[in-house]
Length: 303
Image (cartoon, rainbow, N blue to C red; front, side, top):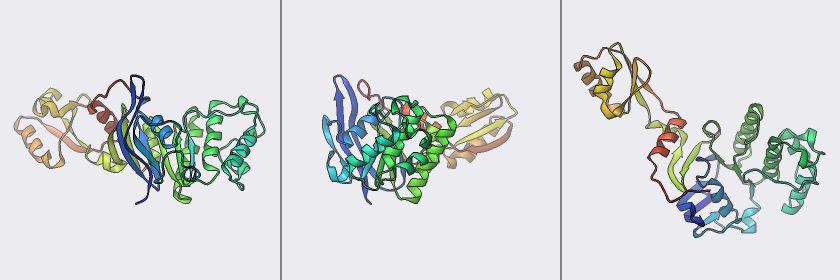
């Protein structure tokens, strides 16, 4: 299996702040990989190190097996890290032409990409007059238009309206599937990651606290929803620490599937009148929140 981005025991400190804390990950080539975490989890720092923009305090990172800053590896990569900035005197079209010249992409389809990201109407306007969402769209065009093998996107839909968010998500999925581009997408928006990514790593305070396929991460998190005609307090008394109320007449039981029959028997023996017992599959939000709650604290924070 080819590895697009690899980090081995990365640590990065800024004064007293530890942005990455003994951080290791191997992101395979192919598909869309999500890096999920709250603001300050260390997502942007990971990308800056991998691209050779900052140096780690300890540890190492590699792009396609090459050290950060390796020009051959960087020519395979397009990236948009946080909110992009452009020379105010350049138009959108001239910005892409300049980037094409710098990257050696002689046949880059500048106008086609401006159309594809929805800002062809503003191609000849100065980027100083672009809205935040328009700058994000231009950044996406800049990341993709040189036909890279890997695209790194840091909060790519920030500042966009709902319609624009849907357009960009569809574009990312299309490129990954149709053109074989590997996309690493960092976001704190759970819905975005759920809709776009096949695999995900959850970061907290500079560490990876969970990693796997979206289906894999949620598979073991289903809970049994018990609805009863009896008082809900009676149900919770049997469930103990494994139960939580879910409305006036229902409770959620955090148990393994194989333990469900024994629990049902215990409820019946306790005099609970059960009207329904049904498994409720977990969603990524539930997994994310529970993972962050149980993650061990680390130093002072991350960037």
